[in-house]
Length: 169
Image (cartoon, rainbow, N blue to C red):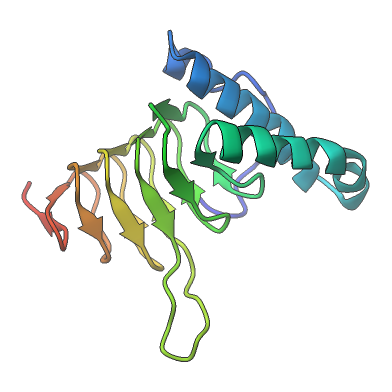
């Protein structure tokens, strides 16, 4: 998935991936509606009241930080969603699973600036309490075990566990 990939604005594209998970469905429909603000400046200005409501509802009440600018492919599944923090520069591919207490974002560099955020491939399964930090690429069909800290690129089809994350399969 790349920044130039065609965006989809179907607000129900994550619905099937979150069967019987009303919280995840609410978060993702709200996210998809808020993401429409990225189309152009006029829509952004019109949607400012909604974007404020989105932050209050999703971040403060539902405990999931998923900024509207984040690029997310279709079929995202959020399991439990509590204490999930995703940086707005993160790119997430299609059909990924994210569990609770997961952090994806940039890291502070020695000069006080921040690195780029991770790019997550398609069909990635991320366990609970996982940190994915820095300008790294996680390949397609990767499984990341609970409690892992991933700070290096992960090739497609791998299984990663531990702190720091080690490829075991």
